Image 1 (cartoon, rainbow, N blue to C red):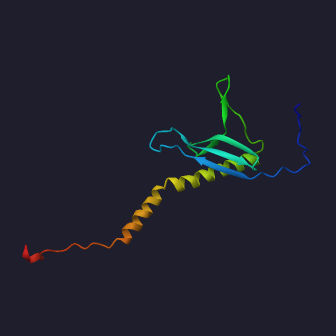
Image 2 (image 1 turned 30 degrees about the horizontal axis):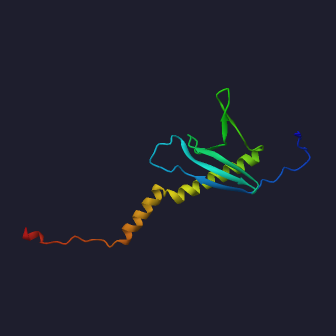
Image 3 (image 1 turned 45 degrees about the vertical axis):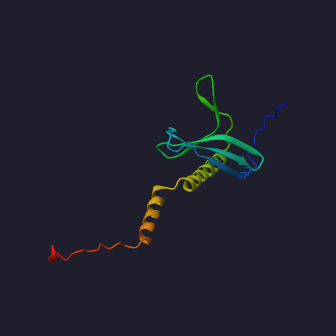
Length: 138
């Protein structure tokens, strides 16, 4: 038998449990995946896991969508979702933070590649062209 419980307004909000995130980037980065940037799996407090969370790109930057199911109305509805604003912010922040860290590790940025190229160029000895003849010997 299910029990409907109404939160007591006098009680403090529950603390947000620990959030462990694993990010899965598309296997073939050269292939066009549309706006899909990757997937996430989240473990909440070591007692509840949520898989198939998607990370998409938008005009405002990356955003997170919870796993969903297409309803009879043709719209997608979340299968599971945070029930408080604080938990949604904590979950989305953890997912996007883990995504950015994973991208940095697995796919070096253009800025990083430029820094590396500049470093390699600075380490190479400068080559001076050897003159074979003076100006007057032409």
